[in-house]
Length: 410
Image (tube, rainbow, N blue to C red; front, side):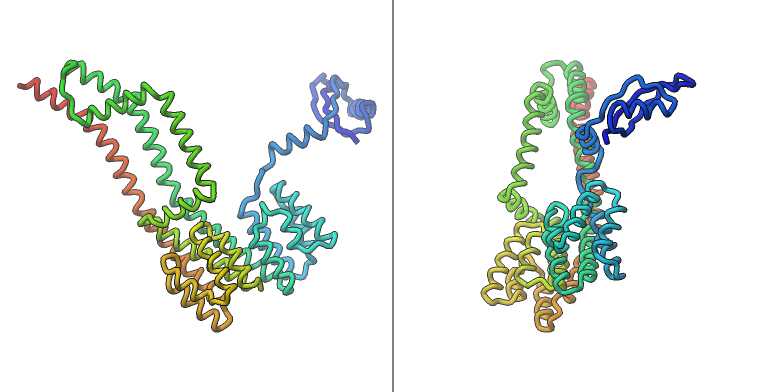
């Protein structure tokens, strides 16, 4: 069957009608259109490629974390209720709203139906399912507790998503203010300061002695106006260059070292890293993943190269027979003492996953409190910053006017 696009007129009203029709060939398409009391004017075949291009342009290109969390939770519930895995995947695939996710689930379902394990099927889609996800599912399949493992995964994803959303929400306001401030600065420098400067020179004459701050502002304004075609491309190139450098392993490492030294930010970064480590490591251990493998996977998900390096070093020391609690205790600049103590209790009692889950809950609450505190501080700081910028510009304008008026009185 082929698809044809047609333009036709209605036999009764001569109204133009457009549409698509499936037929074995052009002649069959004409017959089908004629049966609908239409007179075909134009008939063109629609190629499969054009449909795919059109569809690919319209459909979403990625899968949101919320969609993955909902899928995980639903799959856990269905398996726990006794629904067969293939039937569960088929049902979730049919009800998936995201076309990309629907295609992914269809491929996974096909692999599972052909005898491939769920973990191996998921591993074929690394952009959707992370190493943690795949390894926990593999451990759950091996232990026969897939529903429980999926429930753990859903909880972990929801907690991580909550932290990310709160951090983004806290950063949105200052970023918007900074952008507005920069745009306002360039706007004043390009459009306002030159006119005010010309008025001051006209009033005081070319030999008038201007205050230092006014000279600086006029100098910056003249430089921006004279060399904007160089300045703005240079700023753009620098921004792109910095972004690309920070995407490299070396750039990421230096950036992560730098943010761990910032007074207010470092506290939040450390608490987020500890919460992620505790939550992820507890989930993997609880799912039956080996200690060294769990630690290795966790190191890549903390989100900070400094912590990743420390945990990779811990993996090596664990292979040599050392205890994780002792290794963590030595990294007191990165991990709080309570984490090492709780790990020691977990190692002694054999309940590391339960203990670390409580640590994760505690530090996630700490992150919430810290973010709220920073958010309350950011607003007045940004207001002072913007006020200071406006004050400098106002001073550069008012000081020479006051000086000129004083000279006129004398």
